Image (tube, rainbow, N blue to C red; front, side):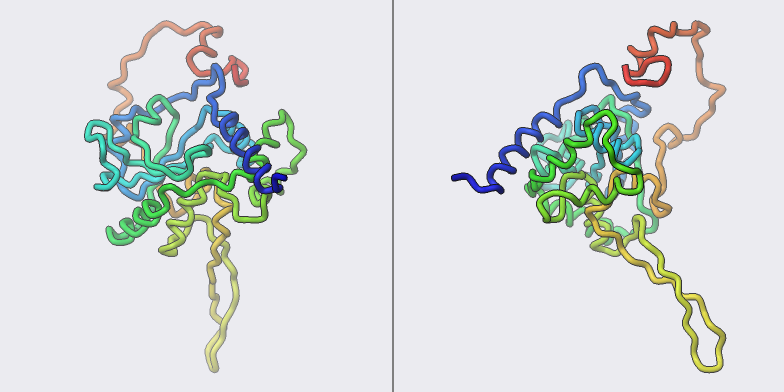
Amino acid sequence: MFGFDFVCSKIGKSLASYLSAPLRGFKPLATTDVDALRQSLHPGDVLLVEGNTRVSTAIKYLTQSTWSHAALYVGLVPELVSDERDPKVLIEADLVEGVWAVPLSTYSGFHTRICRPVGLSETEIDQVVRFVVARLGDKYDLKNVIDLARYLLPEPPVPTRWRRSMLLLGSGEPTRAICSTVIAQAFQSIRYPILPVATDSASESEGKPKQRVITWKRRHHTLFTPRDFDISPYFSVIKPSMRDGFDFRSMKWSESVPAADNVARETGQSPDGREA
């Protein structure tokens, strides 16, 4: 007689394989090539990705964002460099593989964004990197994958204000079904803010007027999503195209205008903005 946990795990594995499959015909608009990313990324940077899988659809719905995946750039960590031509420099949480290291070429042709924490010392960056390296091999609690699958419906009946809290549903254990969890934990391990909650209070001492005191409270790491690194006031957005300066006057434009029916082939969307 199989237990409930065993059945959920088997279902979770099957769903994980299904949800990780690329969407047929969907091609994100790549705004930066891999070489430019490689020259711009620093250890500790968060690389956001617009994914092209079924699970990306669910995450985009839940977070109301373009970004459906996040990976941490760790640079050349000796124990990860097996191929000098295409070294594994990113650590991410994959639905099927769990926490693993991948080369930057994994996201060649994808729409990406670099989010860089501000003000960290080399020691603190190393702590963040070591935190995620130590978690290589961790697996998802695949029972939580069932929750993500529910949001593949065209119009899931979930009010906007409840979507973030929905990420906590599942087996009762902290979910790891959202890739940004381990990255959020890494930054929180050194008390670096992502989207903390501010508590405003007043203190007073004898003979002195009241003073405003702000106390910061961390959000639970399972509530973080890829978009949070983009909207965080404590991460700067790095655009590789601006790295060496930019002069739009040097751009050479074609005078021909593409036909509307070519829009879908070039961007993966129909002329009216819907997915082709």
